[in-house]
Amino acid sequence: MNEYDSEVATGLLEAAGFKVVGPLTQPSPPGGEGKGEGDADVILMNTCSVREHAEERVFSRLGMLGKIKRTNPDLIVGLMGCMVEEHKEKLFQRFPQLDLMVGTRNVKELPALIEEVARTRKQVARIRQDGISIEYTDLIHRRGKFHAWLPIMTGCDKVCTFCIVPITRGAEVSMPAREVFREASRLVGEGVKCITLLGQNVNSYNGRDVAGSVAGASSWAPPPGVDPPIRTDSRASRHAVLFPELLEMLCRIEGLERISFTTSHPSDATEELFQVIARNPKISRRFHLPLQSGSDRILKRMKRLHTYEDYKKKIGRLRELVPDISITTDIIAGFSGETEEDYQATRKALEEIRYDGAYIFKYSVRAGTPAANLPDDVPQEVKGRRNCELLDLQREISLEKNQGFLGSTVRVFVEDKSAKKENELLGRTPHEKKVVFSGSRNLIGSFRQVILLDIKNETFLGEIAPSPFPLPQRGRGWG
Ligand code: SAH
Image (cartoon, rainbow, N blue to C red; front, top):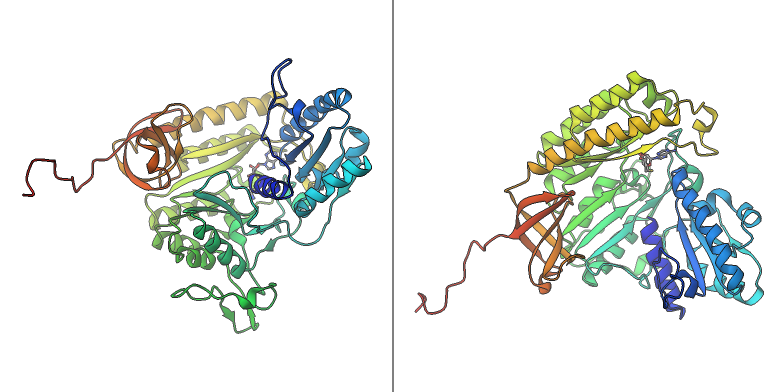
């Protein structure tokens, strides 16, 4: 979601006449020329507050920018994203070098707010709490030509005790299905072939109350041959489109070749969703479903709304319907109250489910969450050890899973040239795994059959498969 917001901010700033020189990670080396933070007039950081570590990095960057500002007092330093929602104006006191704070629902106002700071030299904050933080705009500056992020909902109505998202992003709000469909069609019209649907709880999407509630919607008609993406719920005489139905509607857009989505919550991972994935090859063969812990006691403490057994049953059913699905997850190591036995249950879950990949994080207390009232009682070194051991275990499993793909030929979307070598291309398999292979740059944006030959650091090395219909060689055959 943050990447999408950054693309929107970049597009809006460019349209307002700013020259965007980032993203930047390093200040200019002393005596170096251009392109560093020290050379910009405005530095904006888009922030995340899910884990403490991400926040600490922003705080230390702010400290560094304070020093740069001493030599360049005209520099404007701004923050966007979840940290703004979490800390609000309080950050102005702690960081007097901070000039601007823009809430997740106010990105559109960014150019005007920067002008305001430049004009008044006062600290300016715009943090609105109502409305929706999704801004569909054709001014967006997309990094990829063929791939687009498409947020469809924001916020979260779940009550996971460790999680700050309900505080920073508020309650769930879904974009009307009609708007999503229109935006996806527009993107495809611009040449996009792969779309990733985004949401804090993407699969609890509920595009209710569509008709009449969208400015301009009445003038919109679906392309020929496509049913309008709206179903009337006769009982309540209102319109509702749930996630599986939205996916299926989007699959009907001609020219849209792949649809991925993230992040799903297990409670909303339904039979209907699995059926839709099974019958639509356009939908990614990777399903990301955070488990968090393999211990029922901890899952209950986290208020995850599922037991390990419920979760495992869902995965079993999904694998039954889509045998080649690749499943990934998120795990938290060392949550409040986690005993050695609970930790062993998580290890067992990784071994039983055999994920293709997992993001594993050490638990960090987030102020304002329900778990902030529970003791953070797993000592740092124990958390660290469990985290490392889980990572090691998962690395082994991921490697074995990836080795299982070797020798197979898969349909790869050619995304870009490879960052490392000339004449090498970077593609994505139907399971969203990276593969590099030799080929001409004019293949970028197309699909190719690629044989997976080797694996190095989670990236496959491949080769374009010979065409099953070889062209006749010159001078032979074909009269
Ligand atoms: N909607 C997702 C959560 C997205 S946040 C869900 O329902 O699971 C991304 C991941 O960050 C989470 O899955 C969790 O594993 C991790 N995370 C969230 N809060 C955390 C915390 N306080 N400490 C450590 N990891 C956390």
